[in-house]
Length: 242
Image (cartoon, rainbow, N blue to C red; front, side, top):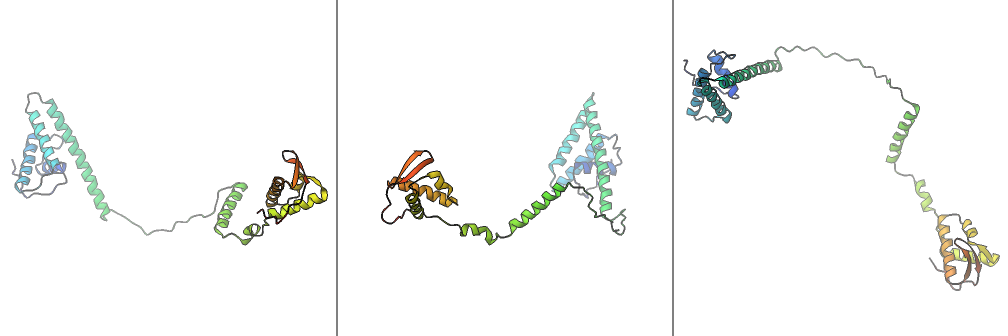
């Protein structure tokens, strides 16, 4: 048998080493002579150990697998060993095919077997061909305008109603209610509310009537909000109820 070359190469894994041994010793990958392959493989592993090289666990696992197949092949009935030998042969064939494909890709990426040509301009039609419903375009336009307007600072006119809004004083409204009752003697509360022109004035009317009724300056006759008011006496002193 050919002596193994102890100038050790670096292999990516046990399958790479097995493929190297089969190629080097011209073994039949489709019908692997397991005894010869085991001897070559274990000799290589021993050579690695003799040179104090770190032997990866996957190489040792493959050695155990080969020895197991060899042991089964020594039995009188060795169908299991033959099945394992065929499985190993199939794995090696697949590995060899993958390695060959990887080498071909490596050559192409290195610049071999690659053809290029000068880039050519690509003509494109920028005409917008989609058909939209008019309401869809209007909604899209309004959304865009809404976003644009939200980014602008608010105009002063937005705050004008707040700044110029008249706040009605309760004391002034008490004087107004007393003056009305002094001339009309009697009036309905709903009529007084209808004369209000703002929410602030409505609140002031309600508080004024409530204060006058509490102090006994007016009499209230009726139910719920539809009641009549009659002046009893004019409040004395300053009307400061705010």
